[in-house]
Image 1 (spheres, helix red, strand yellow):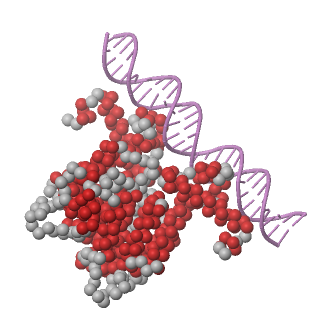
Image 2: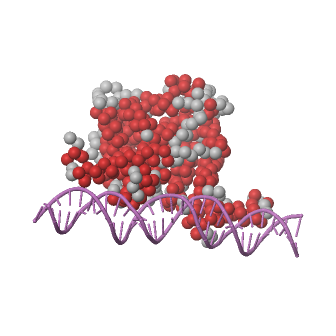
Image 3: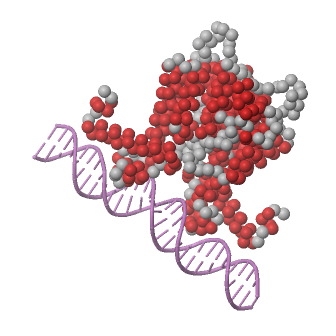
Length: 221
Length: 221
DNA sequence: CGCTTTCGTTAGAAGTTATAACTGACCTCA
DNA sequence: TGAGGTCAGTTATAACTTCTAACGAAAGCG
């Protein structure tokens, strides 16, 4: 019994139409990118005339914001699910890559070029910090200081800085080394994924997955 | 004596108008991003009516492609200039960061979200490989195998793969270790810059430059 | 059954890119 | 110096886009 079943017929219909709009929006974005999204085209595809869509989304921006929210939510769920099934940092890396390759434009909706004026709603930044939280959890291994610390490249100046500037991890007990590790995980993997999905490796001849795996090895050694 | 001086008055005028169009296009992109670029608005700003611009650029896409080309050219020149003045890999990293921060939207024009259908002209990919070349030069230190190899994190599987898949560096004598180093330089620094310029570090409290410098230290240690 | 809410419609305003046809100025060349 | 061609910029127009306003009709609720 899903949520939709519990609502009035009108609400069910409304939810269904909204879902179809979003689905077709995803299709358009996948083939033409976010700037190629056209409300009019969606309406025509659905057999209704332009302005009808404004009953469901106040503006084109609101629709896109909704898609961004869903993309963030999807990524957060993917990461959390991987973490819940016992994946270590390397496992999270694999999950992240699979999620990115599954729908490149969805990845770019989250991590792509921002519109200068745009400011994400609070609930989206909340999801972002949820992702960060999962990363921080995985960044401090189970037997933390017990056995020989299998650390990747430590960096005292950076850790000193992070120790004093950790608003983003204020409510997380991770030590500076884990903060550093989580940040590197994020930035390094995003660097590869972003360039790969944008096609900057095309024609170079090597397989990006080798580079990705190599970075994962170093991050978790 | 610049190129403009040698041309006919008509060509000089034409070049000047083209330059002014591009300048205003940059201004628009800086404040509204690439999707916010409007040919009509530029024409009005310049005191002429819409279609006049089509004498100078065949389409909006052609104008943007021209801007992308200039952005690539600017980056390549910046990197080459740094390399020519004796900068090592870390120095190139500093130059790259300065260039990116100087005009974030210009950076995104090169490394931002791609339009799915778009394929860059050959001369642009040529500039890209020119950048890669400068990176490869700096990635193999002066006294390469002479003294104790001050290597960052080696990775045999990755280097083995790169040794056999080096089309992108076919005409460059750099050893696999240098290929790996150049690739990591590129992807890691882009990862940080991309997230920083997109504002993903906003409100986290730490200074991205610390992370950037830390990565540079590890890449060049 | 009647009232109200909501959905979808058409009409229209204000934009956009881009093309076609025309005018007028400049530049070259005889 | 005059004639012709080239080229810049114009207006008009088509085909789009987002989005608002006003209206009709259908569906749900008391």
